[in-house]
Every structure is written in C-alpha cells, then in structure tokens.
Image (tube, rainbow, N blue to C red; front, top):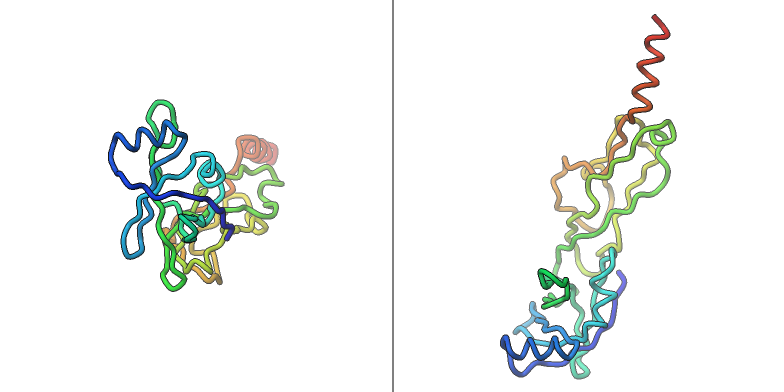
Length: 194
C-alpha cells in the first residue's frame, strides 16, 4: 500500500486554547495511539491534504523529532460550517498486528449485460478489510466480465486473497439491472410475437 510521509511536532499543552492557537497557525491537533502510550502532536494542515482529501486509502509515516512511526488515519473531525479539519487521530501500525480498514472497490472489465443495454448499479464503494499491514491491498478489484442482465456480484464471490473481508457475505457489491429501454424493447417484442 502507498505510504505518505508527514511531519509533526509534539504538543506540550493539551487543551481548547492551545488547539485554537494551533489552528490559527495552520496546524491541526492530532493524537497518535496504539503504542505504549498516546502521543499528542501538531501537524501542518497542508501536509494532510494528500491523506484526507482523496478517494484512495494510504498509510501515513509520521516523523516526530526524527522518530518515524507508521500509522493509519483512524478518525477525523471537521468544523460543521466551514468543513475545516479540526482534529485527526492516527493508529500506530505493527507488522505482526492485524488492522481493519475501509478499502475502495475497483471495477474492472466490461459487463456483457451493460453492452446489451443493462444498467450497472454499484451498491458498495468500500469494503471492510482485515489484514496485516504488509498484506493490505490498495483496492479490492471486482471483475465485471461475467455479469449479465439480472446478475450480481456479492462479497462471498471474492476469492483467494491474503486478507479477510468482514462485510456480510450476502452484501451485493455490484449488479446489472434491466434498464427501462430494455424492458420496453422486450415488451414490444412479446407483443409482436402475438
């Protein structure tokens, strides 16, 4: 998985007033937890642009006073009116400990059902994936090559990976429904046969 490097500085004072001053300076208060003890940090908001405002999922390498720590974004808080990032939580990664992340679904190929006039409906855009950090995929690929009109692809149809998908096996990822034009063409063809 892709890793984005950001730098942070430790926060001595933790509180509302100090957080407000950090935001005024163009920084965001952050917490790194998951290790022996949680660390309070200040991160420049511009560094987080590639981490937060993207449809991709990435690992983050946080450099605090020369100490590099690999982590993932666990939680973000935005201002309700201005949508400015107010706070971010990072979860420290360990090579031997499994993590759960929301990974985007990537559709590949062309569906024969869509070529015939069917309508492609994607129900799930992200899947919950549990894996070791080394085995975490950048995205989960779903092939559309066998989807005819009226067929669907479920979570249980995904096979052979180094990770576990924790969504319900019966959840539909993508389906090909009959479009109005195709329904109308079929009813007219049925009337013509009579």
